[in-house]
Amino acid sequence: MNVDEVAERYSTSKASIWRWCKTVAHFPKPLKIGPNCTRWRTADLEKYEQHLHDISMTAFPSPYND
Image (cartoon, rainbow, N blue to C red; front, side):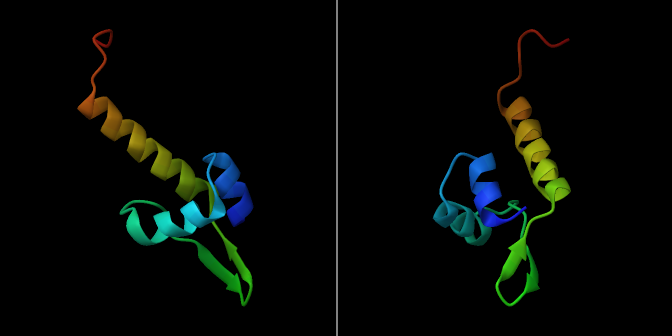
């Protein structure tokens, strides 16, 4: 995915995506494909999303889960 697609996926700006790359510990790093071509693997983004989900379930367990 390119930066526009990643920004759309997370409903944020392209500047935020680049900032997250530098400041958010588990945010996936992009792959440099060429001089002006950077992409993210969808699988890496999905893994990051699962990580966020796991953290939220630990921090805020549902009273409805057994």
